[in-house]
Image (cartoon, rainbow, N blue to C red; front, side, top):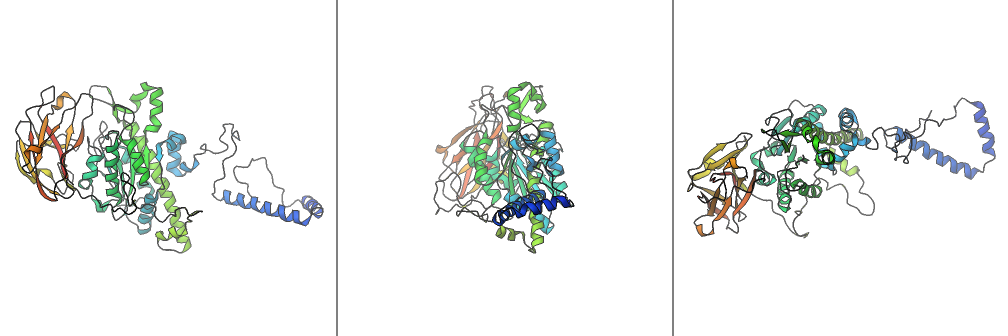
Length: 524
């Protein structure tokens, strides 16, 4: 008996094949019908039965009309039309836990998933370990819930789901987050946090540390191009949490979204899920955010519940790509091919000369924020980053590179926050830099809280003291404490140059502070 596809009503019945009366009746009536009509009806019946077979074999039928079976306007779909996200053990769990509508809301930009599928096909076919890293700020560093190694951080939830789906004994996770820095720091210095040759998947989380504005988009583009250009073609995903302490709801993460779409990098966000709820019921913020030492709600850092949800939403998306890649590999083996790259030849380009799939996952030739010019050549950015970072992969530490450091020393503040620090006016350091693109910058801490006692420095290049520039660590109360780049000089000739910085006695800090904290020095 032919089984009907699931979207047909159960009241439909097929005639039993053993009914002789039914068969004779059909023969008698068939003699009264013109032969051409019978051919037409036979063709239509064949199409219906073929469609039923395909749908019952795993195809997905078109949605039924609103108001269909079930009485909720969604038809007989178990997950209200979001079934494609709710398959498998983990997908079912996520949909049951959060509701499929929230899973869908979290997917601000799904993209094609090409890079993730490439990675999953490669590691499965070659039996390789899956090497995962995260570059983020204090949220990814576990602020308020633990340290970098805490199993409560969102990346642990995502990684556990991936490791369960592909349980290779050598799978690895590196949490390379650094508190109080944004994508601008990582755009120039990410190679000091992860070993670039040994990463397959990178999650980046800088949405609330980046201020809303063009600079956030530029720095995110620097970071994405640097990662996507790696020869092993790693997959990259932008992870977005929720922060509500800025001057407006929009933050740097909203600028990152446009960059993600240009580079086909998925964006998974907690904000679309939680923000409507918190606007309607603001008293529920304690359910999702940590508290400060004073007992106040910290609207920049989600709590364990928020971390768990973000990790699950990202894991849901990633495992969807894993499932597709696994199916593609099965198809590959069944077809007799040996290389997963041969799958691209089996995909159709579409009609009317639309682009084919061959270039998916490639880095665009042009940067997003340059004028359209098909003949332009974009030279990869070469950056020298001397950093106070204490990570195991730091290749250019700042402190040993100093030519002189009168009054300056290392300051460790925990959570991977380490600074070149001085507080005595007149304290000066010098460091030699290799300039290729004509620019030198310092990356320094800015904060408005009185207990930071931040002051100001003046910096200059070589002996050009008359062109020195001032940088203030303190800013208006209410602003977050965060790292920020300051341009010391531009238009420099390629080659060696010396950067000098001196702590000023004059301070804009109304509390009288003079200390200054430098995170890194960058030459472009």
